[in-house]
Amino acid sequence: MPAMPLPAPELGEPYLLTPGPLTTAYAVKQAMLRDWGSWDDDFRAMTRALRSRLLALIGDGAETYDCVPIQGSGSYCVEAMLGSFVPRDGKVLVLANGAYGLRAAQTLDYLGRACHLLDKGDYLPPRGDEVAAILTDDPAITHVLAIHCETSSGILNPVEEIAQATRDAGRKLLIDSMSAFGALPLDPVALNCTAFVSSANKCIEGVPGFGFVIARKDEIEASKGNSHSLSLDVHAQWATMEKTGQWRFTPPTHVVAAFLKALDLHEAEGGVPARGARYTRNRDVIVQGMRDLGFETLLADRWLSPIIVTFFCPSDPNFTFPAFYDAMKARGFIIYPGKLTVVDSFRIGVIGQMDEHVMRRVVEAARDALTDMSVGSAAPPAAALEERKKLAA
Image (cartoon, rainbow, N blue to C red; front, side, top):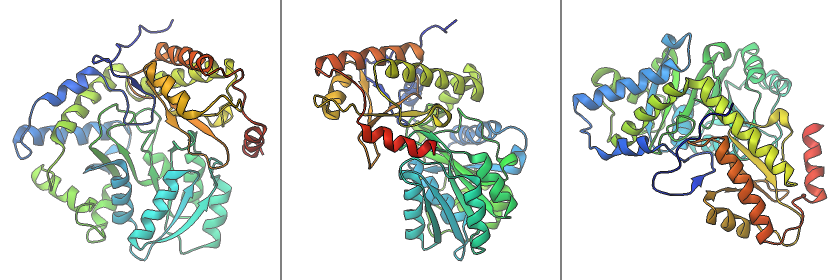
């Protein structure tokens, strides 16, 4: 039986069908109403709780890792991870199939770290055999960077086979799990992962303001003096927190308070398995409903993540994405434009304080929007379906 519907946004704002920032619980918003002193013992206790509770989410082997929160957006954490753990004479194999892998490669260029970019295009998954072949051919590569869920397309990348290839070649694995951690299992011990990053405003359902690096303690200790940056030095932030319990520079105090409340709600829901199950149900309902309207997904079911789904835009000449966006927003839903370069698309996120009841309303809103736009068919152009065949191949 479906669970009781989650409460609608208390302030009447539209649902954010995006991969973060996302719709948050009212209790999370309320947690930001109090001011905290950044040097006060109460806030230091909050920081300790944040770090320990995030480590608890990775399960067995957590004692060999530590959690280092970093002020800023998720991209700040990716840069902090790369700049802190990749030696200045190191080289990173970046596995890209969308904007975030490409951004990581650009970051390495800024940092002056060598990079081998495997660019799979808009959405094709990097596979373990490809990784193995590249690592065999290029002994200079020291690290592999994988994107857990690439939200440009919504693809869930095969991190297990990537990890296996990396481990077999004796290289170190870094993971950008920005939009997946907290809802999808991530066992860094089993993956032999040096470090991974995520953000407060993703699957834990907090608000923007900080991210976090979870890394092996020995790797953190060994990274002393390696960072290119004062502000993004993981070792320096960790050492200060270990010694004083404080952040080195002004912390986002209200965001931390909101995140701790979000962690309470995450735990009460049933942790990672329950959060992932709700998001998976959200995805299944929206995918089936939109397909019933005639829309087509970019990805086959095998690759669909329970985070965000890419749909092709209809070929009907009456359809335009700006008009569709406005019609959906007028009905209480903010959707995401597509990032594909070859065909037109849009994306619908399924994470945040939403459930299958909301997803059914999204389908109804899409149906009504098509009617208002006089769109007779939601079927995509033939070119879109030809593009999708590449994934099957």
